[in-house]
Each structure stands twice: as C-alpha cells, then as structure tokens.
Length: 409
Ligand code: PMP
Image (tube, rainbow, N blue to C red; front, top):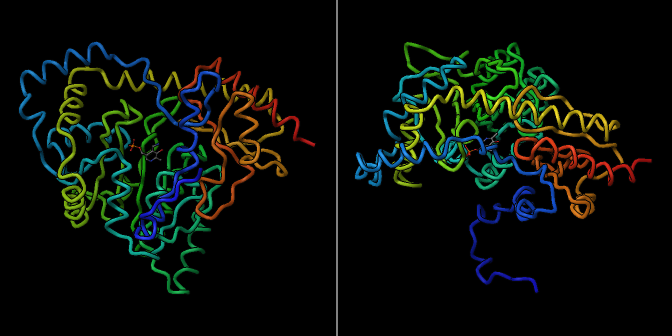
C-alpha cells in the first residue's frame, strides 16, 4: 500500500525539493552478502589502528572529559583548526587559523555556503556530472543549477566563459561555481594546473565565488599532489584567498564516522559561516574534534594516508583490468586517484533500466542519471573501487558484463 503523508500539503517548497538520491536507494543492497556493491563510496577502514585509538581516546576522556562532552565553539576547536592547516599545507593551502570553520563533514560546509549565498532561482554553475550530495543541497535551496562541461582534464575554461557571458546577457545572477578539481566524484577526472589558473581568472573576471571541494586531493595513487585552486588565489596579507571557499574533510583520509570537515573562507563569509553553525547545530562535536586532535598528535597520519593510497591503487588496478577484460566496448577516463570510475556503456543501453537485472545477477552500481541536475546521463554508471576487495571487484565486473553483454548488439 502506498503511504500518503497527510502533512504533504503543508510542506515548504524546500522540503518538496528533498528527494532520495540514486545512492540512498541502493543503501539497502550494501548489506546483502549476495550482492557485490560497486555503488557506495564507503572508504576502506579495515586498516585503521582502532585498538590504539581506543587507548588514546580513553586517556583524553579521563584527562579532559568535561571539555570533551561539553558544548564548544561554533567555529570549531582552535587547536584542530591549526592542525587542519598542517594537512592542507601539503597541497599549498595555507590560511590564518581564524579563517577555518569546522563543520560536520564537508557536506555541512556545502550546506552553509548554499544557505549563505542562494535565494531561490539563483544560479550555481557545477560540473556535470556532479556530486549527488551537492546536487541535493543545491536543490533544497531551490538553486538553478547550470551544467559546466568537463573533459579528461576537468572543467573546460573556454566553455565556462561562453556560458557566463550568455547568463550575463540574459540577466541571470550567478552566485558561485562549484568544482571538485581532484579525482572528481563521479567523473574521476582531475583539473589540469593550467586550467585551475584559467578557471580562477574567469571567476574573478565575472565576480563569481569559486567553491573548491577537495575531499580526495591527498589520495592520488602515486602520491602526486596537485596545488589547490585556493593556493593560486591566496593572499598572505589577508590570511585567506579572497575569491575562493575551500572545503576539506577527514572522511576519506581518516574516517567518515567523525563527521568532521572544514571550510576555509574569506573574512566576511567566515562571520556568516559561524552564524550558520550556531543556528544549525550550536557547535560541532567536541568529542569528535578532541579525538581527532589526539589521533593527529599520536599517530603517523601521513603513513596512514600512504597506506590508504596503496589500497586504493590496488583496487583501482583490479577494476581497470577487469573492465578491459570483460567490458572492452565500454569507455572511461582512467582516474589517477580517488574512488570512482565513470563508465560509459554503449549508447543504446540505459543504465537505469538494467539496474534491476544487475542486482539479480549480484552486483550494484549507481546509474548515471542521478548525477545530473537535468536528467541526462543514462549511458553512464558510477563504479566505486574503494570498498570491495580486488577479488570482489573482479567478480562484480564479471557479473556486470554478464548482463551488459546480452544487450550489446
Ligand atoms: N564532497 C564530495 C565530492 C564527496 O564525494 C563527499 C562524500 N562522498 C563529500 C563532499 C561529503 O563528505 P563528508 O561530509 O563525509 O566530508
């Protein structure tokens, strides 16, 4: 029986814009042992030093329990804000610690920036395909999301400029450009350094804020680090980059369960971000932040990141080998880091319509259409190699091929 919510007529427009993503719909399959999930982007946590972390946590709780379980600052713990800058420094992102705001994952940073800037109908330019979690936030604030085009080197500056000119001519208010420059979710591509500079210059020319979301930047397979766009705009006399909001997270380099991320913001936006934090959650969790401080001080987090890299490198290689062997007629841009392969199947196959059959064959993926604001993407699927073992990845691709093979003419 279909449930009809008696309150549905009273919902705000923004609540009507809240719809389950393609990924949420697949969560149920993740716990089914008969299905190999190439769908979710869950980080690999098996190698974490949990027993040692428990000892450290115990010490922190005994020594600083009252602070740990008390309310804290809306902007976030000052010591953690400094430690975060030691991490971001690896890719050239420096700032005055006072320009760092701690959030509940970078997902909340996305929420704050959208809440601060977007009135219904305002334009956000975002790469297409786009991170589903960002699309969800943008939709909930009733933004008009316009697709920016990408190729194997990321967002295309020339096309961006043409698009901005057109929007300007028809009087559209573009508020910000949202980009994931490293190991894009879901497209897998990385923006070239040359393009980073060009994209920044275009945003400055058109007076558009650039929102740089970088959860995967330290997770290249070979250890290559790309300079953040933020670093190209950084002004030491200010202590921040005046045209860029940078977002980062502990989710992929330590663990998502902490729900701690951050944003690095210009002065004025900082005030609004802190007020957003106060109104949304009063303050981020002291317990999470203090555990992270203890972790960063007591463990070799750089070595942990190196280990993550080598796990993902091996899993990526397993997926690429399996695709080349079992799905040779499918194409993709081979990622150099991150969690995802954005696979293009032959044009006459619709990935949404084969999803059920694939689940019955024991494999899940995310159909491409959920990654677009405008309903295209049916010839794509997102495959994640972060969580399953290399053996499962191989078997998963084999199962996928058993369904797709039958559809290829
Ligand atoms: N941005 C991107 C591009 C992501 O892929 C994710 C998570 N998958 C997030 C932001 C949010 O991550 P978190 O809130 O865990 O920091």
